Length: 411
Picture 1 (spheres, one colour):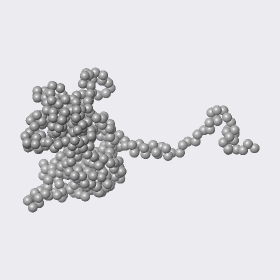
Picture 2 (cartoon, rainbow, N blue to C red):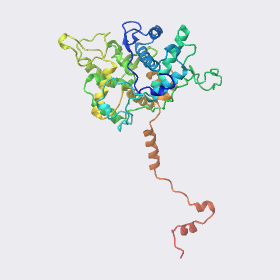
Picture 3 (cartoon, rainbow, N blue to C red):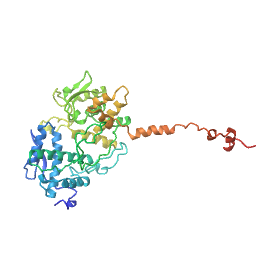
Picture 4 (cartoon, rainbow, N blue to C red):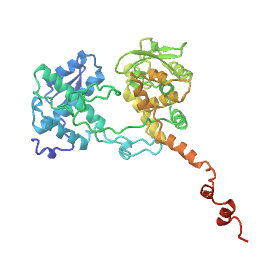
């Protein structure tokens, strides 16, 4: 199929190839239907690992390249002859395509794409979001830049910048920060999202619906310091300083270690949870599954991963009729710290692990529309001051104005 009849591409691409986990380097690989590794992608993934990217990042790159390879198979285009027009058609297809089914929907079949009445958040649907498309474009541009340098790719990168002919920063505003790179040509705009803060009554309901000390300890820790899900799940037993009331996390991206404060309530639930674990080793993971698989075969608990954490929220949301997520607790912690007059924005930035304070202000410290509207409604409900009679400013006598508006009789 060529570019002209690309509109005939099905809403779901054929299930060609797959991403396989690999022990060691590169952690993940892209293979075709014949189980042979796609060589250019494999070399690129090894390059990412060499640069220090984490396994999760390499995995996400591999899946974006798998989708691109499936598209190239449908339009019958060699990967090293892809053009800007091919990318444009691919972005148009992503904007209207349906994601492949990883499993049949059960509870969420009636809520996909709708707005939750309690949280005012939209449920996920089966469409590709603008952030997903932008991530795909960034991955493809990085891949083709690497391939061009290696001498195996096309002469021109098919993922072009929006103003590729203009010199970078030629008309830069000195009051604004420099962008690391230009904007990609076919990047869709991303609507600005307000922070999703749990009101105190909703946090009480969410916490009350938890069924284990492990979940109570984990969520209490997240709402007290705003650590990300991956940062909390990566903790070890030795990462808890009971005396100083601190926990140590490895920051996303920079991989720096940082000690964060944690509430006394979270430490209380953590101690109750650890009392239920048989063997506590300093270098062992802090969070474990509650169920033991293959008990007859002598198997033990497994370290808790992100899918297990999603299961906790899935069960709780079903019970409450909500769609809260782990990242909502990070927003809630940021909002609570920002509302404390004894904490500065620099304090909030340090705890959240942001490199730039602008990220803290622009993303996490916006007040919700409901909070602003409630203050305006309070303003509107205040009694208005009495307006002076207009006649005074025009030179009329008070007696005449009183007669005019029915205050006194003429006789």
